[in-house]
Image (cartoon, rainbow, N blue to C red; front, side, top):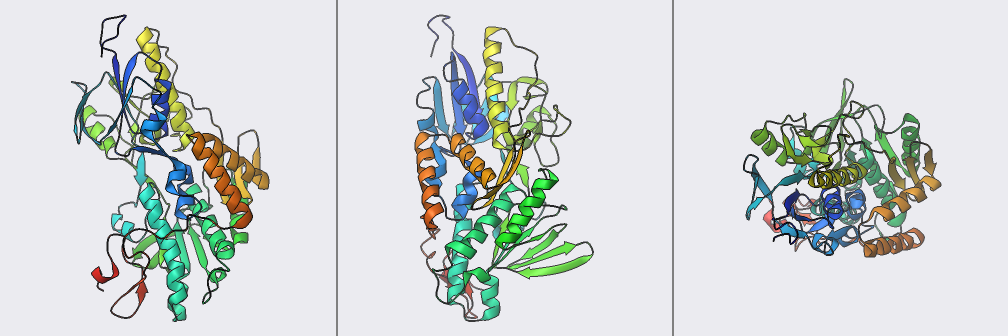
Length: 456
């Protein structure tokens, strides 16, 4: 493609990652005389802040996802490639994908992070994290299968284990999961089973720090803890998980070690960078932090490579107040728009020297129906007003209008009826069946196996 006015090929901008950072950069460049190529291994943008609602049956995956081609269909200068980045040659400005090669003039990398088990990756089978649609569906399967298994179980000790839920990590994701599961057990499901009382469920939220929601102000953390306790969640702070063996969680509080028998263990304790960070370090010599994030320059470029930007959760940006910016959607959105503006300035030969500055729009976490905590900087809210704020903010930032409408209707229906329509148990052909092992014990088979394929 040749620009008719300059008789030159347009500037090639390649964006890797269709999350908030990559998508906002692509949208901002949609009217410019550049050729944009967006590369993602998924064909959709996922609104991760609401992923926990998929995991707990309030929403379906399609409610919080938007096809990338549809979102960018009005950008005549933009191509979407379903592919995965494998390697890079920064000297030749070439990107290697699992389906070929792409040349670039400017590269924007926004491949995000995944959950981190701090050297205990073998725990992932027993305690899935929450970063993808598949993670959410697996969590949903385990949560609702636990109630189904408890309904069939006659042994009281085994039934207690099925009705025990452990969430590791007291950040926003852990708090939202704990609140949603409590709402399920103590309200939504109470009239739906005959042999069990779902309100007998035990929900534990484990946090290594001295309070939940560590990034929030202490007074909001205290209000969130009080609200979760009122919902029926048991919060254990200053608690470190030392082992997960099957359905037993071993934890340590000071010098005291204890165990919890739980059939459902969910991980929300930390993140680490995508493998792309390591590839960049090997090819450019850029420094990484302890979780593999790329330490970027004040203008979000890789040191020594002004044509390579790293944004979103993959970037460690500590030039504002000495601390890395949080891995939240507004940071990625603003970084994407900043980089797009910088590229526009460069093409006009008028690049300014102003570093990226994040405008903090606040922090929000929902605890349950009618209750959330919100820190907007100029005001701190809790309770029903905070919950309403949380609802409208999340509706506003959903990418497409039909998603906004569907989620708004679904939330309204759930609010008044408590009959969430996405409580489906899926995964494989046997997901409607609780497995029985050779000892006659009920169990939920792994996602990729049927009960007949598993032997104890």
